[in-house]
Image 1 (cartoon, rainbow, N blue to C red):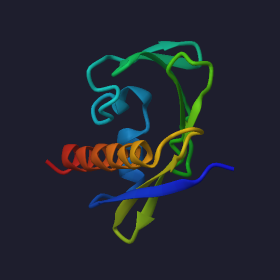
Image 2 (image 1 turned 90 degrees about the horizontal axis):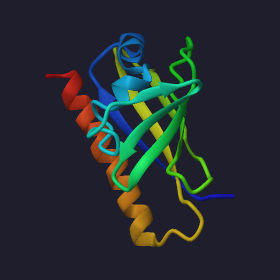
Image 3 (image 1 turned 90 degrees about the vertical axis):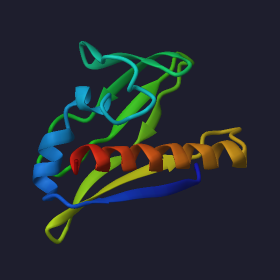
Image 4 (image 1 turned 30 degrees about the vertical axis):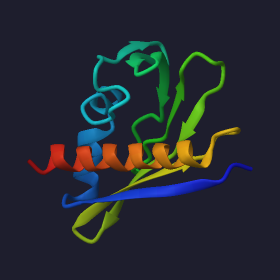
Length: 131
């Protein structure tokens, strides 16, 4: 079992409106810093992008009425990394919630950096949506 850390960001927007705005895979490139320098290109059930360390292959949960935006990334090492993501109601606003799993052999420092990277990306998404 992997240890994990939940990272969330409050966004002053109706949860359903928020989900409908951001659920499409190509929207991730607007705020996810690991993808922001590239355009996502669809290939069947997968999407390809250029990540910081090279090509990345991604797949995403299909559109759904529950605010689920789970995604899996594979940077070419043969193992997908699962990133659970949800948009949930918070009265008239919303919460974006992501779970960051500590991957095997990841140092404490690197795990903390991964958490901060996700926190920064969610803050970027908030800024993008509230400009």
